Image (cartoon, rainbow, N blue to C red; front, side, top):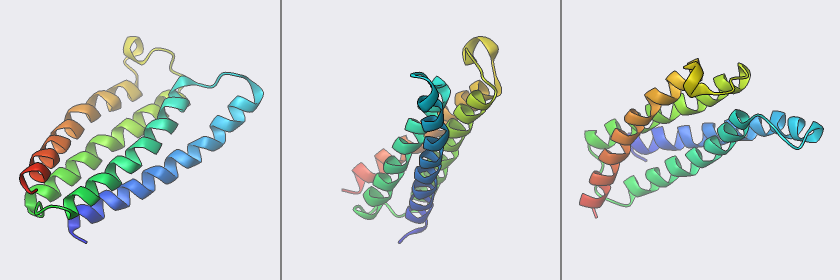
Length: 133
């Protein structure tokens, strides 16, 4: 397994575990009320989606000739971009943020920083994988 694949698989497994752990407070909140913090719900689901995305990218990297330094850069950027997304949602939940955009909360800043980095990493990955087919 190449270095970029190892990076993506490791993050994929860790973020799935994190999303699963977030299911515990989510279940506790839902057992008391039909509603739970939307930040908790969103972060739980986001983490559970990020895992398969990273595992899928790891497979895609292995299924093509895209094994260069660019693949490692792409993997690092994807993980560096996705991590603040999970942390931002968690921060918003723990700080009981109602409107992250109006409050410009820590979670908002983390979420805002995550998008461009992840998009660049995914773009490099997409170009590399498609060109390697």
